Length: 207
Image (tube, rainbow, N blue to C red; front, side, top):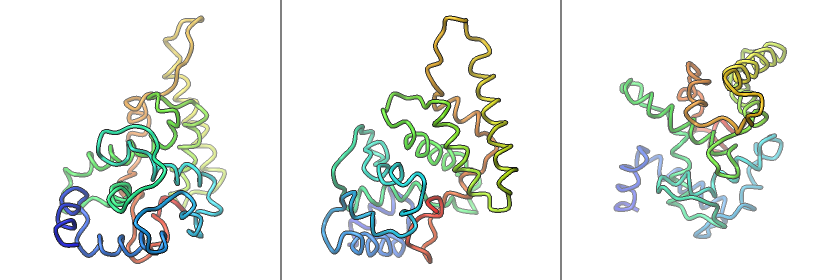
């Protein structure tokens, strides 16, 4: 795996040892096959009860997440595509503060794509509510009522900022990615949406 591993290291930032761990996981999921299909993800216990299970699985088969400027879904993925998708869950290096903003943008793009299911460049207000609920679920010290209050406030904010300058006969077309970035300014997704190699069932985002 060494030449391919070196290239994968450059493209994803994973170490060679981390790539080996992910390759082992890929083989276990695919029963030693060369590709993964959607059904293979059914063997991940933590996904079974996840409310956005289908979106998480679809993210692995979305060309937008392969770092190749592609679009549209695929029926199966090889290890290279699996690794590219998993790289969205890589934590930024603690010694590279300047890397955090680009990592944050990539992770938020991944989340945005997961909810922009028709690939039209926008998400609806209802889809945005789902995003907020998911992100708040990553903050373990928040109570349910507190999280609901924050989510409600976030919805009021996006509604007011999105629609305040619209004419009465204008139609709200949805939230763009740039607006999405502004709405989530300050949320440290780069420190929360990470894979832990000691717990390889799923990324921490998928719990």
